[in-house]
Image (cartoon, rainbow, N blue to C red; front, side, top):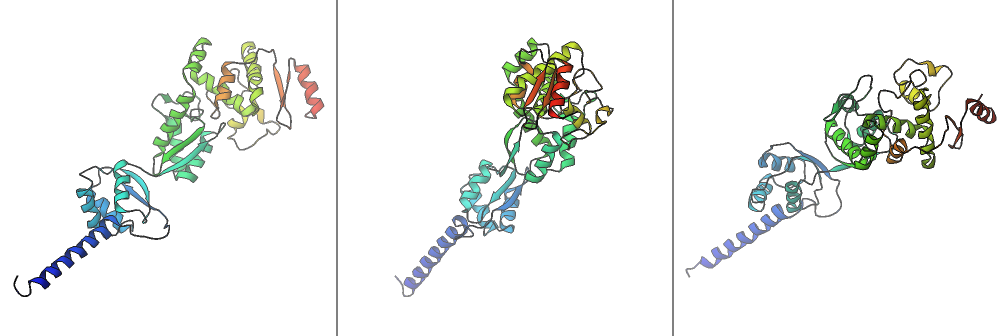
Length: 333
């Protein structure tokens, strides 16, 4: 070994060690090693290149080095594709953990709860607050409908009644159409084979069942009374009587109020069941499974009238005279 070779070898070894530390620090180490920094929202557009994704991760502060992440993707990622979508990525994650999330498509999601009895407008407002989906965009989709559900004559929204009540995990950045399709899928799961067969036995369309169920949903919140309320409406339909449902008038007026003011039952609207006979043109809210079942399996009673008390319970009558007596006792008239 010539003089000076030893120092050169030592220097080369030092360079290799430092390079190894750099590789570990840049490729494998998190940008923030301590604490719990807030996650950063990163959106990967469809078809976006690996270099563009690496550049965005570095620019937003998720990783230290664009080049380092690009190398990691090609060396460790094996050419796997980065899935499009919106991600919430913490700088405390290692680049390898970030890479795994991006290639697995583990996009950020928001939980959206659609309660029983919610209208299209109420869902639209909730989507705006939780997922930043513009209200106007969702209402436009709800108005025209999605595949398999289109607006019928006289209806306000094609999707009224068809946004299944449940909890959804919606990908962050999802479109109004994607949210609507997911919720319609929730309805289709709710309105399963047994209910469809029962509707066929009764010679009812799905829209007729959902419309009746939506009225029942709004008229009573007490599960045990839904079949009785359903029976009242069924008995009225069979006799050709108007349904006289306050809920339909409130919907015709645009919603918001909980009680009708004097004279409002005269509002001209295809949803006003004080003025029309039969069912309105479509649902007035999203009914739950209990109301759907009640619409298809009404109680075997001959009631024609009911009055809601302050406690929320309903008092049923077979005759109009009986109804008047109940109203007088409750101080309604």
